[in-house]
Length: 430
Image (cartoon, rainbow, N blue to C red; front, side, top):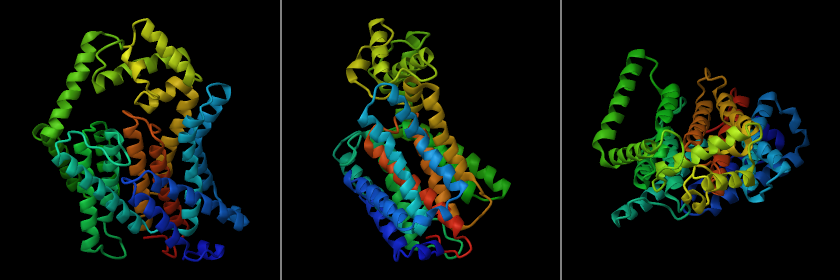
């Protein structure tokens, strides 16, 4: 038990937090309920903790304040935009769940969490997704999906994220070597996540893979330049070979290139094109979003205002009518969606979340304490996935999107901060 936990007289705090988080993540691909229950349970426990220990300001620092500003920036932007018009409680609810990062951060910061146990739960969760995907592929299903996540896109993307996080189990702690059993669990989790991602046919999430590799190499790679260059060249060569020789990858890339070429060959402008394909419909949505931002750059057109703008574009023949018929609530790109509906105000909130969050985790990277590194890398991987996935999808397409980011960011930042506060005693973590 850390000194902070002892001061707060919360016996078994670390084990309790680990259990709640682990159970929520372990059943993530089986049911939508588990993660939500875990998030709100931690939020309630954090509220009880603050009420019981009213001297929490004694431990509050500017670094804590920075994190609070980072995670609340985008929800506040949505709230202020909706004050003027277009109040949508369902949409605000999805974004506002990011605020729950704060109580999760505070409770983990106060009592700590076992990263190893949480990561093993993540491995178990993505293994279930892998088994489910294997049976679907065996039955001839071309694009797999899950019980809790019926859409192939988020199902494949989150499986890839969980598979990459599973790799963290493989790396040994500086104080002790990892057991062969733990390493095997990490390998299985990674393979299951990779297989599920490919089986889902979700090519947009693959953009995050170079970022994942870069993060791992930054914190766990060799410091020898010759080895670094050799591994980098080998990695690039392997990716090119896989893209060429593996049908599941090469075919999807070929389809994407063909769809983009088909769209662009119809017109020199981003106007109506072939929207029956995934690339075509995205290009049509992005064209409408960019034009919407140009018409109202400061505060955007709002949520209802953008729908009216899209309808006018369809009547003018600038956008394919199928786009309105589908009824998309977002434009499959968080940047363009935010720019179109909330303008520069929304983009500033988004930049604070993404850029500020990455910088927060990159602070004091020279400290090689294993407890700090594991939470730091977990947070950076989550941000990398959030940003990369948001280029072709939405962070808030489903409530479940918000919840998984809320949980992962909360425990990553809280675990890192707990490790910083307890680096001398070495009780932060694993």
